[in-house]
Length: 605
Image (cartoon, rainbow, N blue to C red):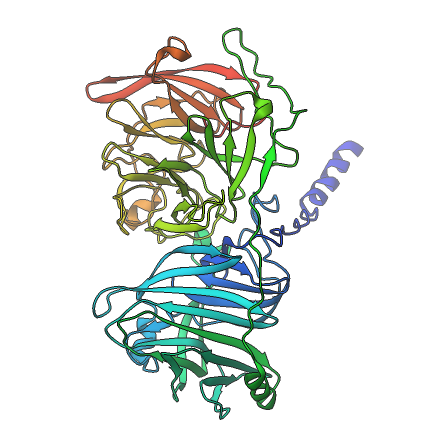
């Protein structure tokens, strides 16, 4: 009786046990130039530490600065940063100085009109990429559908003390343009100083000074505004983000830039003052002397002479563990060859390393950091000698234009899918199909129907901003590759909701592979379907529980397995061997255990 009573008493106590404490956030090192990350104001943010205390966040969807704060570096959340699944939306770390409303800042006509403000929600801009130069960050984007075609803009950012300075370079254009340098709640006030504008906010004044030829402030900008703003949240990634209606008196600090057959360059300096008198003093005394910064030096690390040996024991194969340098955490999410002895590797935390001497003695390898600050890439593809990354929010092409051994140009190749910021919103790939198109497979797990292209395979033609959604139903397709002479697309998918066991899918146009997919699939099908396209292979549950990357054996140097696939498993840390054959136009096959004993989950091959 006593035991019985004791169990009943303890059970409610167990349910009432306190939750595990939230793990503290992680932070990027102070010399890192930028970080791609989801934030509440925009899932596609790029955060720039302008100094030790001034930080800026740029929204690449609307090409606007959405947050500037004074304090510490961005709080990084997510499994690859702070070690927990939640939270995963990254947060500012200090006191907000200023920001802009969720509208495009550029307009072809007077943006003080209500219809132009509403047009700011539309695609008036297209983000092209980011460049680093002498320790500075330069955002590159186009104004699209303007008279005479697209107009290129380069917007660099820096800090001079607490003053944020933006330098704009505008390519030739046939019409005048309008730029809302600031749009905030408050009242626009006249300080009586040329090319200076200010907004009186609750307890302070936001001041802006323009310097340079070809741009000047308009004498307008007072008004009342009402709009709906979306906030990206953890719960919103699956249920839809909360929105709020904001309204009130608003100040627009609007510049107009005349048409010109030559590029125009000017500066916009923004600062916060305690009152109008202090703002006038700051406007008159600001000299605009840039702080000299030095770019980080490329990092090259030597192999670790005391690296662990491999524990993969096989009588038929020799296995070697790469001699990773000390404190180098390579959570590998993508690999491809730059040359016969140079291996490009991307990591979960957003770094790219080049392993030099990758096919030689492990003790003589060198590890060169090529890039960092990426958004949890899940694949590397080398095309035309350039590294292409499958970031969560885009395919990014990396280039070393100044030949110093590190990337300095990060071009957006395509981003034609919605990104909720979820820790599960991975984009796997890219790979190339037989026609030279990029192909990615997006996770549908932890998604929602209204977020476009979650759970879809996308085909992207070179140079196109559009993606063709051609197959759907993926849960967590943590492996994508090509197989055979026709470069057929294959994808592994992980067991879980809707997916009974891990499987290898031959991805065909119009195929549906089991997991409910988002737009453009009909909403009524998000509750599930009765049938799905069967896979080429089911992996036995005891053998593989998190199937991952794959590699085709293309010749006889790896034993009698030419024309077969090697497929990894993340949870069981093994490599399986898959033999495929095509019968009646359909791929089918069988799977065998191959190698085991790896020191971590096998993610890429």
